[in-house]
Length: 153
Image (tube, rainbow, N blue to C red):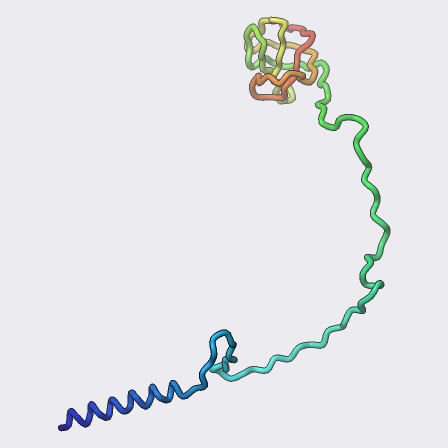
């Protein structure tokens, strides 16, 4: 009999708590319900801000008017200046058409020449170089075309 009274008491407690949970007002779907915070509410104070005046005085930036762009350049800006006569050592030789040259300043040139000149690696030369007009890959260095050449012993 003791077990029956304990079971009945436990059942009543569970039903009572379920009834208390469902005692809150029902909410229809699609409406929002305010949630009360569980902790103590803190008050937030804000500093008063200066309000900027609205109107034409605030809508136009102060200062001089922007200048117009200079326009299209009169001459091409992507041309490589001609090195002119350059002296150095051949790093990639052969009978052409591609050679390698390193100047005494350490600048590397990838030289193209269709003249069929035979140059050996290590030769000391002075050559007239112009910017390459053909897109031929002659290796590492600034692509140039060789005109006249002088050899040194």
